[in-house]
Image (cartoon, rainbow, N blue to C red):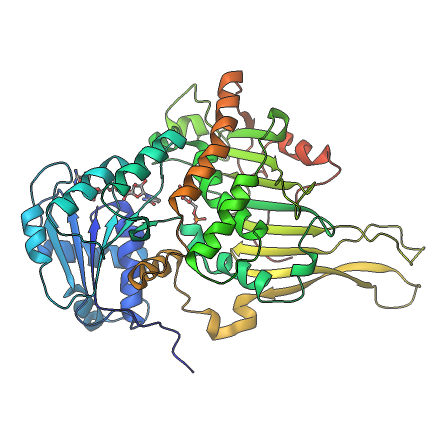
Length: 489
Ligand code: NDP
Ligand code: BG6
């Protein structure tokens, strides 16, 4: 079998915030998996940087613990781990002061390293300090890359400020803004399904599509990160970035090629074509206590919180392809299952030649993002057996793990893929500054609207599909949400 590991150049990756939660849970175990896959050149290095005083040995112990706790060691043994840890270093650095910068600069002087990348896995308030000091100490140059984490701003004004701050030190082609949804295997498959098949694209428009549903349902609550989440809510935490990116990939025009700017230009056009949302086009919810679990307000430690842990909305895209087609988006915490899906619901037949059949049949293309990644096309067939021409809807189901077998295993997770794309210098799966700003420009008036009206989110039962009002959002249009379910029917 041809190796699917794309070789990358020799690199130094500095992780600011290398001792933090994200680094321990995602970045470091992900890098170890890439090492095990043979994608890390021999002399590449990973350098942790944070304020905590520690030496290389102390950081290596921390990395080993993170790998053991958060996975990544499948297929590796003690010798592999040691070889990986030999590439790991640590420098105590304060983003806000001068401590550690000279030491970091000295460590970074090695010759022959092709790629220098700096992962800003710290609070966004430190991005500007890091960018400035990296330049000041000549650690980063015109060829270096920086990776910045979400949240990218709290609204349009703060996102613009952040873009301007980064732009003062780095060019746009050096800045990699992470939206980890773009690194998910099936999210990329959206593009393959749309643009790699002749079957769907001719039907992918207002003539044939009745509506589209995008669901990202989670079972977790916000305990442990309530202070961040309560300032954010589902709109800022999920819709402005992850759901918006899914919407773009579903709705965009075919780019002329699979190239970073060609793809991002098309996504930007979709965001700019989104129409404003009226108050009756959205429902906000907050999970109540139940099943022995605390309420949202208890988790957020804010007894009067008006922040939504659930949101459902109806969006329209004002262009020729999508005129009149509603896009229903919903996401929430503490729902009945962890299930993310995009469903393209096609229109009814204009005329049925089967007069005895009274039920309505529809083709639905469902793209399951997680779990059970796969696609499922609902088609109408004759019910087998005697009894005349009775029609029934059946799924043409393809779960990728079943269909592709071992080929579907060992797929890099989102962070692994995205970090390696940074090293390869491929920005296709990263958000461009203007995309982020356009997304906020659409989101801000919606949030300002509910704040000005003093709207409160409605309570919903934990373990449910969300608030009743969200059902009404579709019922009013004579439609209904698809079930939130974990397993393939
Ligand atoms: P943590 O609070 O767990 O970690 C913060 C890191 O920053 C620590 O390593 C800390 O180490 C370091 N740090 C703090 N102040 C400074 C400073 N002045 N100079 C240098 N280093 C500093 O945060 P997370 O890891 O959870 O999050 C990091 C970023 O990633 C945030 O922007 C967050 O929004 C984003 N993010 C996190 C996700 C997650 O799952 N955790 C998911 C998506 C995004 P020390 O105290 O030793 O300096
Ligand atoms: C993060 C959000 O960006 O994505 C979290 O901040 C959310 O609130 C998470 O839980 C969901 O990611 P995934 O990959 O588990 O669907």
